[in-house]
Image (cartoon, rainbow, N blue to C red; front, side, top):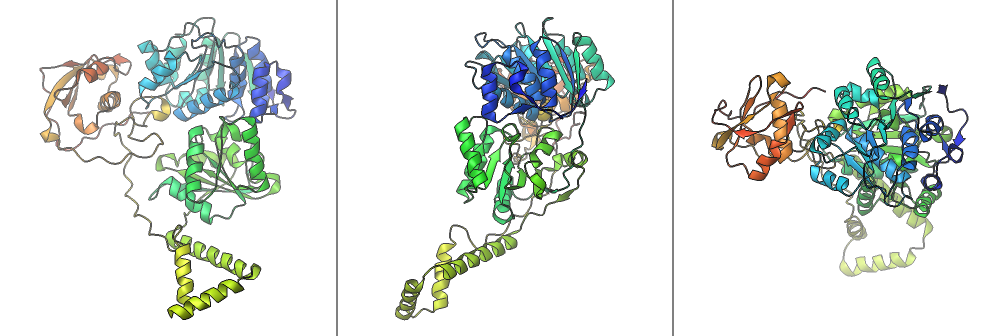
Length: 586
């Protein structure tokens, strides 16, 4: 069935319970999108659904609302599971479901993805989460560890199935679906339907309703799009410069999580740029007050997440800043669509790290537009802007205020102290600019770009794909500080045997990533690796703690338990310089 957004349908007519309808009204949802109107009745009726629609058309609400309606909050077991291709999308889906279910007491959501410690995830599951949202790799790990049990699962969703296929998750998805109870209701959503996805649908979905929404080309010719390549200075400093120098009436800044909305807004406030957060934790009254302040001009900077900003209409917004890139390409279109409304012109600026620059090509195709390079204002330009702003402010005071009494005081001060009027004015100006210098310090010299490689610290190589082998990053995605190099010839090495080898498809990078991520071991302390057909040898520092050794016992590489043990065999001598390992293919 193919449909378009010609005739909006009210949520009230779709058969949803009042608890969900009131939450939707609080969030500002008025009418359903085409995918929601077509999908919700089928899922409420207990049918499987095969949904074909572009990203950003409202699929989360399309499957989330009817699934939540069927959850029993009193049963503290997983009843709904959503598979997402990336960490960012998993977080976004989890936050949306939490927002929809805010009026349902006792309903909890667990978010499971790679690159994060297992312990918080164990706690979420132990507390009785009824909804589980995760990436395939980490979901498989929890199923193997038996920390995630699906005995009571009644609803399973594959979100962005074609993207999971592109990232090499097809076998993982099939493995997970094979562990579902037979009576589990299924929904599969994909922007395209390649043969492999259709085979998965034919195998695991039972007589599904096929809902297909026609793609709509979105033209954003009235929005000038820019991208700033993050380098030299951090994103917060860049944001402050834009807030100070850009020509805008009102600005909306998009971040990834609800906590980030508060964090970024507070930092802007401290820097002298009053900003308001907007997130799903706010009640209806707070939300309305925030939006009214933006519409009336009492505030000009809003920091928001994708979920709460959907449908937001504030004509004053002339600038959109993507502080964090969205989890999917279509969300970019929705974000920049908050500006350039009603025929007005708008500007969008996206902060892109080097590894994210490829996303710009997708954004250009979706918007039929060109994304130009944004040159961040330098110190000299900021100084000129501050001086001009101060001059204008002082000229306004001279023109609009009676300063005769102040002039007499200054003249008397100059006469008594034998200081010129110019020096007195300079002294007053110096005091005025102490909090925000008219001549800022020079920019730090940009660090040389280093090749993205496995630091194996709790990283991000498969963070976005839900696996272990990652690069060292902090919890906000910033690159972690470089650690001092280790003299590997000074390390007292012990050889260990792993029951995984070439026959299982293992590579040195797999071994390094799995060990480093599991026990938080710096890669400099992983020595030589010898791969054999059915086993491998790896050098690790002698005297490994029992706790770490037990943790490694349960690690799997290429679905094979490594079953680590101390070996009398000797691996090749550890190199004196850190070795390079292969990057894991997508």
